[in-house]
Length: 142
Image 1: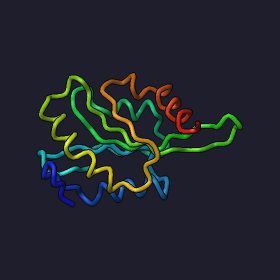
Image 2: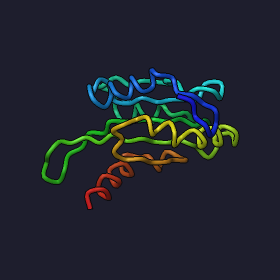
Image 3: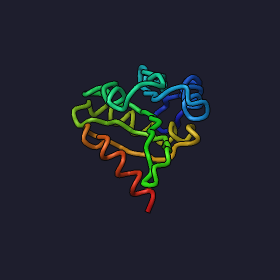
């Protein structure tokens, strides 16, 4: 699937891994990267037992990524639930070219991931802290 804005295509394995996370719950998270500025490919896959902290550690400090995370939580009524987050990780210290390439491919890429429940863009770790994630769930409940 080619992206008209940046010319980046999407490797079919990206959609397969997302579907395994979303429908089959085989993975906790998947991170994606642009390879040679031409194609979105799988970067890392977190096993189902991985923690949120494992996920945050998988994001590079100085480069962009797309990521999905299956976040489990308890409602105020003590009912277990989960939400699938899509995070566009674009750290402040990433190279401008990288930020531009990822930004231009972002919309088209996430369109192919059916089942995303909450979208976020983050430029530093505080924007994707566990508290920030839980705040987004609360915001959506109102």
